[in-house]
Image (cartoon, rainbow, N blue to C red; front, side, top):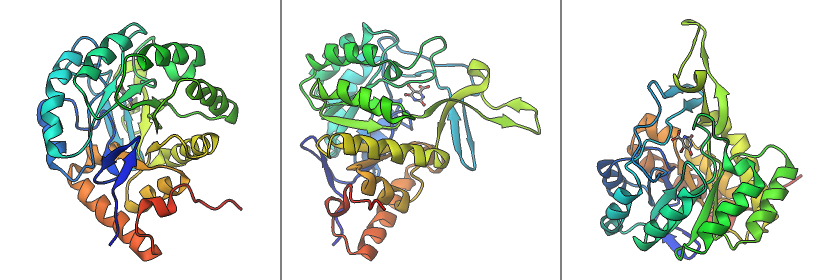
Length: 309
Ligand code: RRO
């Protein structure tokens, strides 16, 4: 029998597949539907202090290679998610609360109240690319360190970071040092590849409205960037900090590649939005078939074992 269950920071997930924060996880109804689906966890939309409508539409566009979005953090506000979390735990799978903020002071306010609601894990989003005028925290090591420090002392459930993609080993190393100083329990990478631009040549126009069309890229086209970041941090920490691999997973083989690079679990964004909740059953079946064909009985047997030449 092939086993797709996994463990992150001591928390067991019945399947290694789950939604990425942002994908079908804003409202109570969406979160309950994730609970009833084949997803191995329920991940909330990144939350802010106040409820937000988000950026003007159109703000998401799917195309054959992936997607571009500039949602602008539409969410119910942290108090609503704090109330929902206890109820979401009835589905027998972990609940991951994604915490964001519009400024540094927002993070501890949200972290304290959400921690008290006792989700199974908390993911601190250092990488939203879509708030006009606000750079991604994860691209500034000093700001990242201040935010990590402030939430670390408040969070008692396993705490992870959602990181942006880095494109140079020097940046992996600098962030690795920051992360290593603060007892981070898990990492999730990558968030969307920020500030890409998709153009529709027929309409001679950009495809989303906010920020002149600039937005975060997801889906198939970002897989090599995601794998590189998973691999880089897996090696930096010698596999000692569990990693959730996110980016470019469309089928079971993509997930297998993430596991080979060092991901203990895998999140899906674009494919979930495009295909719906049935994608979890398909991916569970496809990865089971890949592992069985290769003679692996569990993810642990091939975790991080990609061969270098
Ligand atoms: O809401 C968004 O625009 C958004 C967020 Br918070 C994020 O972390 N990543 C993304 O692609 N979009």
